[in-house]
Image 1 (tube, rainbow, N blue to C red):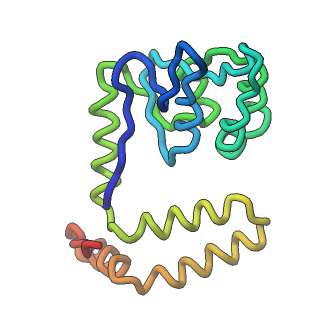
Image 2: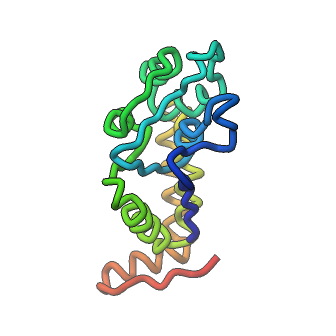
Amino acid sequence: MHVIVIAANGPVFCVGHDLKELTAAGCQLVAACDLAVAADDAQVATPGINIGLYSSTPTVALTRNIGRKSAMRMLLSGDMMCAEKAHAMGLVRDVAASSDLTETTMALARRIAAKSPATPKTGKETFYDQVEMPLRETCELAAEVMALNVPEPDALEGIGAHFERRAPQWNPL
């Protein structure tokens, strides 16, 4: 299993915009990631509105991750938001002391990377497929994925290891 960690190199997390010209788009990247860990002193914003530019591209990831009202608040106010508030609305999953951020993030990455390499692929596909589906279709998809996943080699190995009280030996991809 591979885990990609994207981190800031310096005091500002951005995706490449020149901060003297536009806005950073770091919030958009955070919203687009599967998981996010923020330093307790971090702040996030979609400040385009402050310069007369509606942040339309962050709208997509924000509304799908934090909900309509929270996204609209960010997009229309342009206000900076502290890490705890970003956590409370679901933009970031964890908040760590700035001094512990790397270790906290890497510990999570190691836990995820230690899992079956095949299973997260199935999980992520199912997760994102079902997000926009009606409830009935979502339940049908979940049942179908479970039925297909149980006989997979890594599932059989994981279940066997659980009952035999041993560490699973995952199949490499």
